[in-house]
Image (cartoon, rainbow, N blue to C red; front, side, top):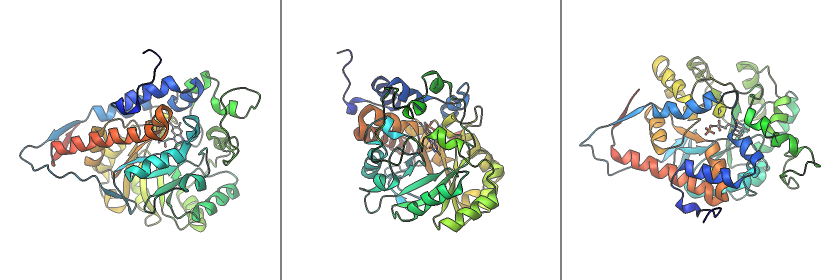
Length: 365
Ligand SMILES: Cc1cc2nc3c(=O)[nH]c(=O)nc-3n(C[C@H](O)[C@H](O)[C@H](O)COP(=O)(O)O)c2cc1C
């Protein structure tokens, strides 16, 4: 019947989940998640770049075994798919980032908590399984004491295993879908707006911690030596650098081991600098110009990953972890915890099918 929601278990892929979330969520919340900068070229290419790569399966290879278990910066996870940090999960569903954590728990998947989450890190990890792993994402503030206070809280949470330092967004990208819809982040600051409101009573203030406002206070003068030195003074947690977009920077990052244990190749889901390269192209660059980087640290990738075949392609190219940003938010919007579980189930199921086609797959590009 028209208008009736299909049961979440009948949704077959991430596009169907996104469609349902699009129909279910408020227009403003949808625009915040969907938007990307300028002409959304990077966002589109992120997905296309994976589709341009062909899989080359070999035959007469025993493919009875398929094991996607791996280590992500030394933490055992059941699947290589992890949830990328994304602000404001409660726009999608009241269970918010804790709902994502619950879904990750049932898949043995890692989750990175956004600096601008709509719940506190303490709330998000409260029901974590003993072996469940989280990272916490940091935007370094101009007022360093603010970041230092947050890091001190993170240091006390044993479920949080590393700090992911985001470097690809010194300023917010020009996201026109979001602006056109009136930008939900601004309306959240206006109690008289009558717009959908995220209830912050029990959260770190969504209003003072929103993505855009935090960007206004972001330190634009970060450097390899100063910033990593400062971070080392405030945490012993390993660091994962998020937003690496060139092989040159991947090469430099590898010089900062053991403090830096990983890099995330990412263009922020196309939300930051439009026409920045798809992460999978950066992965190819690293393979060509400085493959030794893979020996020194974990290389993870996110942006545009929608199918299990994308996951397997990234793994074949040397990535250890494969992140999903919007896909988890769409899952949340479509069906709360069950929606995020369906997202992970769908991608992981496809990745298993891909792997079981051949234990020996190479790529053509
Ligand atoms: C709504 C939204 C909010 C985001 N917020 C953050 C954030 O707070 N910190 C961060 O490092 N990345 C943030 N990102 C970027 C994601 O971590 C990730 O890089 C990106 O979403 C991956 O692309 P995908 O959405 O195509 O999977 C955000 C992305 C979206 C869509």
